[in-house]
Image (cartoon, rainbow over all chains, first blue to last red):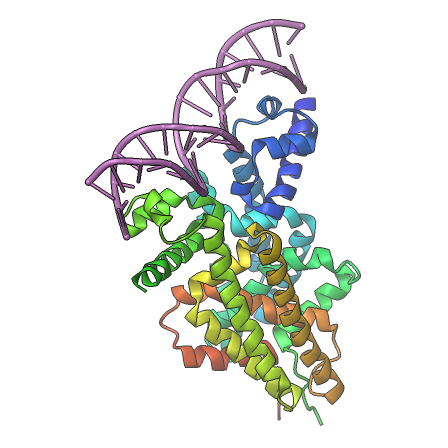
Length: 194
Length: 194
DNA sequence: GTCTATAGGTCGATAGAC
DNA sequence: GTCTATCGACCTATAGAC
């Protein structure tokens, strides 16, 4: 089972490089050098460069799908679900920072079944997210704006968090979650309650 | 001057391909095929593949810098400036949709002076944006949250608009601007004003 | 499980004919 | 201004020794 450990190391190292330069700009020689072996030796642990990419992406995509389903099947008010989803998305981002770069930027280099699977999971995540927002509008807790615009403005922030957060480690995860939820749901502008 | 027209066509076509597959995955042969000529013929109009990238990116980066400076030097309340910046950012995105993909994802493939110039302009844009938010906090119009979090949550949405808007052409530009400003600044949640 | 050597292909770019 | 032909570099992946 030692082989699996080595494989995990390769996947992790690859994720870091993919984040830095993008999938196509990272060569097997780059990856091998980072692991302190020769490129040919990598193939004892993995089948191809593409396999690395698809294993990285599909694992995280599955986590997203599962987490969203779990939140969505509970019978809470939409606003509560929305907060939960945002916090969940932040949690995953903090655990899989590097992989999220590939998930966002390199998914188009997947092929065949893997590409289909990814696209399906991504669509499902978005659809669930949108349904929650729609429900919130019905329940009267969410503004009557175009729901696509609201979905996009939340999701785009969550999806690029992987780029920004590693550079701001002074901000603690708990503060990030709290203030991100507030900022995304309630906006920047101070409200006059008097 | 016909040569310049052809060059513009090449740049435009390249931007579209770079958006689709990323800089490194697009070959000069791909680009030539899209232009209905042979790859060697491209070199009558451009010096290198990298030159295409840097001309695309630096032009738009300059537009961003200029526009931001223009808004920032006026003496308006911070909240007004913030609205103007958001609308300006949306305007550029609609004019240079394809190039924004490279600006966001392929800038790391720039080299030397071009890379430095890009990074400097990007930093300057962010700094100006942050200063406006800080001013808003001082003026009492913006929440006392961490300004980095607020900056990021606005900027991340604006920066990925290029990916989303082309798929949603049913949404008119005017509505987009209006609702995007509201969503980013005032949030999704309906406020109780009674 | 890592190595050297290399196959077989594609890349960016150039030379020179038309 | 476009073409054909091609160079030298680099790519992913394999074969086979140790």
